[in-house]
Length: 280
Image 1 (cartoon, helix red, strand yellow):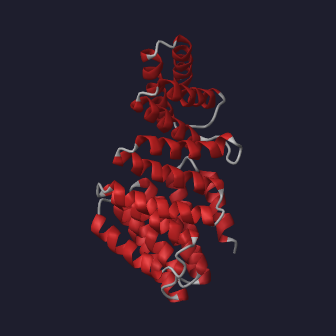
Image 2 (cartoon, one colour):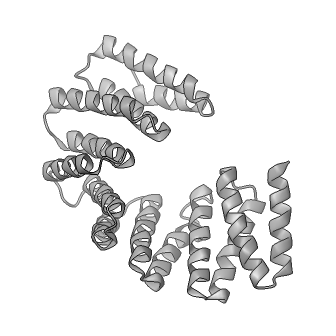
Image 3 (spheres, rainbow, N blue to C red):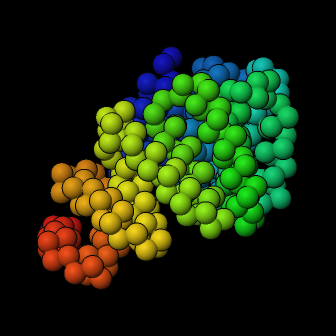
């Protein structure tokens, strides 16, 4: 049974219908439990997929149950291995999002001790989750240290461009909280460059990065530097890049404020045209 292919098919078929997607994933999980057993990689995959789905929906109770079932399956299948640690990371992130920071910290500490290779991408993901926890605890310096360590591992592994872009953005977020705006801008610019040079296709993440970079330069009082990424935001939206409407409105609000304050009538006109297009 090609579980991953069937999971992908379920997502494609029900991407805009979470209720139907949940039913499809639950049906697959139950089918796999009967045909392969609960101590199987197929069952673990489905439980992890359901856990991630519930976590993204904010249904933390069901998400915790799904991740716990995945952990039990992994432990029965392969012991407390790297795969177990990776699933524990997923559960830890759910705890963080649910505000259960002490439980998050305990799960991440256990996961970190279980990884067999401290230079693997899986370990880098654990460091990123630790960084997220530090940010939730208002410890940007601790977050930056962990994000920078994760970035070094991602670079060392020659990782896909999206992982590298995300790693740069994580470091930038911590630097901003520390008040180191210039270094934060350099890291955000490096994340954007992976889209500008064609390593990544323009999409929602790029628009989000550009908006963050533009507002950061604006906050620094560097009008000339802010103008370019604001223009790139408008270019991307005009080109039809698929962006969540709420995210597009937020980016346009920032751009509108900037172009108004800098008396840029052309930029203001472009923003208004895009706002009208969003309402149609």
